[in-house]
Length: 359
Image (cartoon, rainbow, N blue to C red):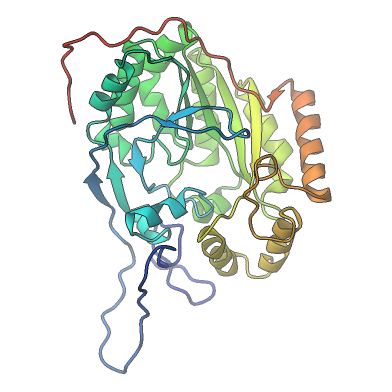
């Protein structure tokens, strides 16, 4: 079924409205109506999935405003379809578009578990917590079939290696057996990202993510199982979702979370145009106001790449947001801007000669 407010083609279950070329593309294509017969555009775009054979799966970063040094992304691209996803521009490195390609042309790390075991077995490896879901969601819809995230967690559980998971999907509850076991030894925590409690807004903003209510039930289920949990109010979009900040924190606190954090909307590279296009489609009367507030918190630009300010913004509106977050966390007894400290002393490297099971 096609939905359109401005007359633009809208694809079922997709967040992006177009497929612009990546910033490294030397050529671009434009559709031209020359009066000849045109085939009808389909209502939906299928998802394609290809294996990616990586030599390494652990990524490192030294950013001072990201609370982890190591991460693993089981997938490249994400069919969750969040229009604001800051990872969209990374698809340009594959020669693909950050728009619809990012949601529909996916890659999975087929031998992730085997490669991870090799990395953990290296002499001199120093155990530090690993983040799952730093870029793309480790529990996006294809994980139900591919189980790449599950295979990584199995390695981490067996080696007693600490891990933190960030997701928007209830599928994380499938792996409660592993997460609960690890949590008993202080080896696991899970954060669920909640952008809005408005199901209708979520439908276009994050088309294939779990509903807001399902995410809160997921937090409650994790908490009941003894897994430390937190909530990420991310991203906060001015004049669109910022008014929900306190309500999201209160709902998450009622579900049992121990900590909270938030991230201001970021619009790097091609993302700024994709998001502006989405705003014009669904909120045309509010679009100019949203972008004016974004620029007011980004020193007059659509995006601020600088450490220290890129996650929080600057200016009066950003300061008000910080104060609201601090006051709400204090009232709800949430630890603000902090995560659960995980244990690193129980790590044991994989045994040599251990059987490796590929996907």
